[in-house]
Amino acid sequence: MKISIRLFAAYAQAAGWRQKECEIKEPATARDVIEWLRRGPLLVLPGAGRPLVAINREHVALDAAVHAGDEVAVFPPVSGGSEDPCISLTSESLDAKALADLVRAAGHGAIVVFEGTVRDHADGPVAAITYEAYEEMALSMLRRIRDEVEARHDGVRLALAHRVGRLVVGEASVVVACGAAHRREAFAACRLAMDRIKESLPIWKREEAPSGTAKWL
Image (cartoon, rainbow, N blue to C red; front, top):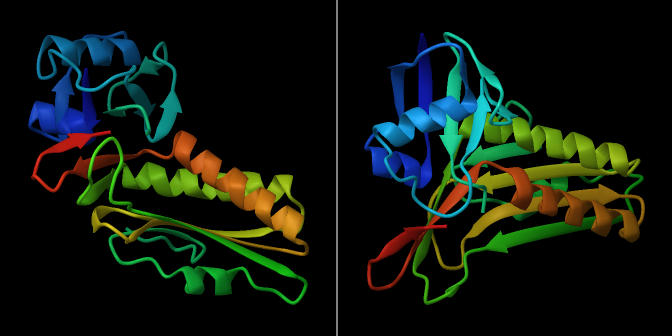
């Protein structure tokens, strides 16, 4: 059967392609797709940890069934715009004040903004970081994170934005803005949203050293 396979970050670099129509035997599971990749374009999957799989833009376990016509995305563990103004995935610079303004309301006595920026060191010196995303899925996940956090913290409103592309030291890669009646709820909601982004958003980093060497994280 024919399926569409999408690769991201170090996997796409190693295979030399990002999306391809492929023929695999049926019945098949997500695990079978990974094994198919290991037998051909990706004899060794780069990086540490088990690859993650999404079928038709939904995270799945490795025993999930794959059907003809499915889009199967395979990507490393998680280390465009949107019609929703409070959700953004963009190659443009992030405007923390603009996001904060989106969550202001007459009943909000607290506005908390978290801004994550590229720093000049990690395990060694850093010159820049390139962020790559499974964009359609990342936007969907950002909406889910927003909905989850707002449901858990009554009266809270969130705006979330993440950069893609190459960022130099000092540029903001992610902004979380939260409006709430009181500071306790605002801080808690902001922290939960950022934790969820780090845990589950399908975005990867390619870290560049001043020497010009680079690695996927």
